[in-house]
Image (cartoon, rainbow, N blue to C red; front, side, top):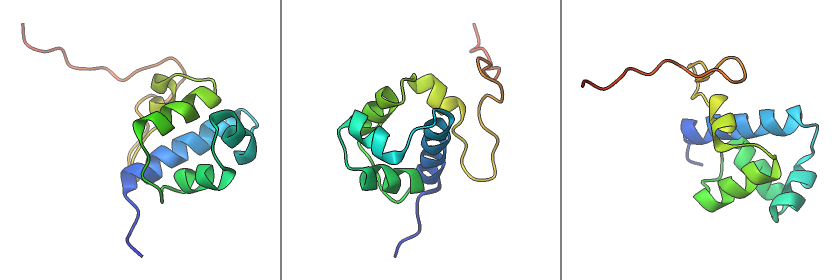
Length: 96
């Protein structure tokens, strides 16, 4: 079996964290997103590559914005982009 892509694992981890923070089951999220709960589980484990539209359906089912989800996205060994709700890392400004 091929090794999971660490980026997909990190994305799945962020989705699972958001789902649990909302006290929702995989079944509830699947029902809201129009997909089988097993599909939600494979995405959360990072073993399933997903289309952008599938990701957006999950984000909508969790009633959050893409920015909120990606604030908790961090590949293995890295810190999330934002550590507190509503904060964002400083971005360097392009040269004028």
